[in-house]
Figure 1 (cartoon, rainbow, N blue to C red):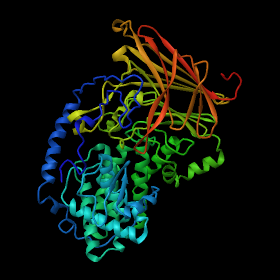
Figure 2: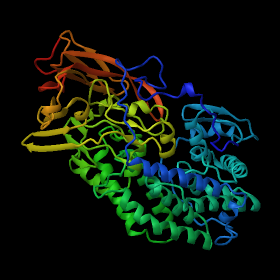
Figure 3: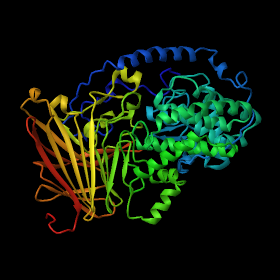
Figure 4: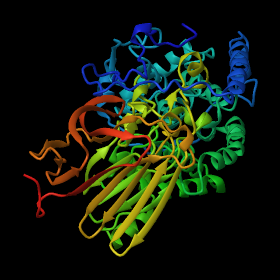
Length: 617
């Protein structure tokens, strides 16, 4: 088995260039003008992290790769032998049972790729068709669907699990890495007791031993700040499932460190430190599973865990749009309505609020995302800088980006990039969401090359400072946002003003580019091409009116909305959207023109219901 992981290596020519402007994964659908690289240099602050990671990574690889390392994970030598399972935690994530039928006959369909493995063979000692497939496979994300097939599914799950334990008994950087191990432990923990019920005595002991080893590894480095809360939550769940003193010891160690990890990861307003709404949703689902596991043991849930659940629930309430899915920003996709509903099922406050006034959606600010609304319009704006450092591995360089839902139709959105789409890093650049770009550049870029392999694809480049001002009046909301990200390259600031008329369900906006105050001496008198993009949800119909300034939009409900602008060049162009890791074709509205760097440039646009007087023909 290759130490680099059990997936087939990709040829160098297949590696996408994030600065080329090409949309990886969907040939024939490039952006209209290639996005030029900002050539973001590695800042001096990264070198200590690079040096430290070089040293520690090699240290752990050498240590964990030693022939006798597995003995340090053995329950027999550390904490005592595990002979039984104590709990069956509930996985609150909804799972489709249909793929389990394919798994029974050896057909694995994961992350858009497929592998045929005729039983009694297994998929462990053969290359996976892609890295996302390998991640799903080794995280055991297929296990819930297989367990839904009754006793036959449980027996096949047991066979595959023990085959994995034989093939990967020794630590390896991929299969035992912090990206995969927590998910596998949670999936195994939720199914272990039912698999044990169909196992022989020897098989049950092997299953318990494997789960105990993996749980113990979660409490050891390497890991990193950004995944610490997830790893400790998974370890605590594993400790709840393992019976006796070994499980109790693992549970106490994990819960002891989890309190501090949650304080760093979950902010007071309920946002995740990565600023990804989906990351907050997934952590909430894990914490609910931990809460259920502790309840089965008649143990109280620690206060920091309960408080984190409450904060994440409050944040989820604000970030759920009328279609029941999440707002998609900063590496977080919309997820699914069923998944969001499962995480909110315990939210009694939201249920009472909806019953009292179902016509008024929640408004407010969480983690730099601002939501304003009228009876038919819900607008979420990214009004903060992207996450930096370790949290920036999933961040996107898209300040002032917008998502707009008209009724239950999500019309304006972004590319939907998430970490599951690892080979589509170009969609993290500024043109990948509904915001303004200058010179077809990106403000920041993912760290690439050997540095990105070492530290992860964290976002690097000049810092972006964002300011906001929100005012409310009778029947209206005014939101003004501004950032200085274009200062260094063009000497310009970008200001986006939104005026929401709540009585007319009409959104009016103004984009302004103006010279950065106090930088007259460095301003070059040139024309900078701008592009204001409005990515449309897949399936949204867009028709350009004869005036060439208006576009009629229709979502799934069929209700029409007019987009109008005074921009000099308006076009409907192809785009792409990532949905559950898969690429779908979509459309985007692009308003283009040129802005002088020594004076102000203003572009206005408006979104209003169709059918009103004055509609264009």
